[in-house]
Length: 151
Image (cartoon, rainbow, N blue to C red; front, side, top):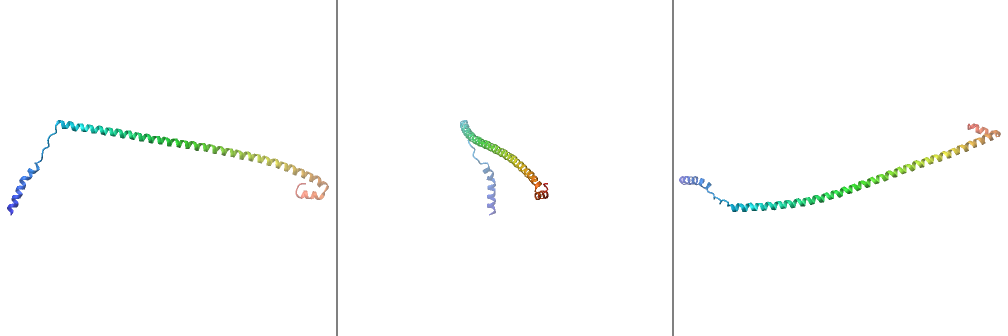
């Protein structure tokens, strides 16, 4: 039995190196095959370049569309800014006009109040003069005027 194992072991050790070197050689490429393969590679490369060119054109069109959209948005924002500025100018004008009306009304009211006050003072001074004249003949009236400090 030991002999059989030894024999198998020796036999396998002898043929293992032979199995490692047993490979099939490929046929060398001919010039025609090389030229055909290069031609196919060139055609494939041209097709890839064509696809790449189409892709670039599509991307340029998309970017142009996006640029147009940005320009439209820019124009809308500019219009909104102009509208806001116009509204602010109109509001400022209204505020200035209202302030002018308030000051004008206040001034005219004060002037009228001064006129009315002056008329009342003049009227009161006349009444006091009349009462002083009457107090010369009426003693009771003279006492009342003295109690109020008018004589």
